[in-house]
Image 1 (cartoon, rainbow, N blue to C red):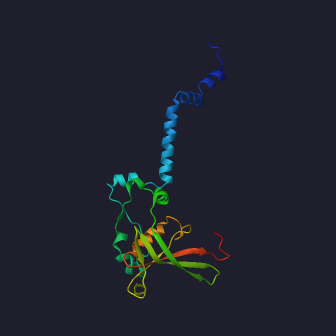
Image 2 (image 1 turned 135 degrees about the vertical axis):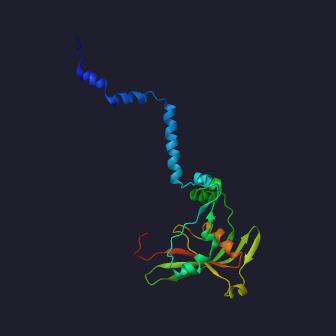
Image 3 (image 1 turned 90 degrees about the vertical axis):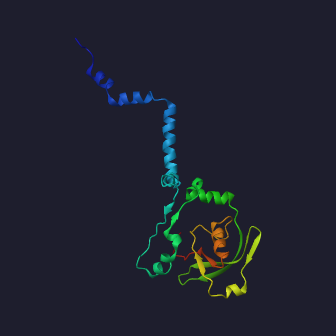
Length: 204
């Protein structure tokens, strides 16, 4: 005759108890390995790393994605004629993340010496914006200086660089200096629009 308590039998056979018992049998190193893998996946996505995407594509790069109005006159005059915007982009494999590229440039970048001439404009809504024109630049001990003849030549194109809110052309090791010098060395006029200040109604 079975005299066991039904409540005790139910408690022993509870699936939650069995699950906890099984979980306690898993070695601690296996838990640490699982947590490390989950953390690596989260960090991979958080830093926007695309190494595996590049690897699976044979390091051919990713196509440039543009958001534009196909009927825009600007698209037909500029974008449609710029082959770079219709090509593919491949970053350095060991810097396959925009955040890693920013960190590398900040700590190891050899920023060129660029002198700017700032023009400040007041807007009708009380805001202020600034345009930074390149006066001269030094790259690997070679000095480039804008001369009057070049400045008066209307055939030289003007390149307008619009950085993010936290970027300044006078920031040490600024990517803007590297971008500016590329245009400057091929007889273009790069000008950087700075978010100098904001109108009083704009809370940023």
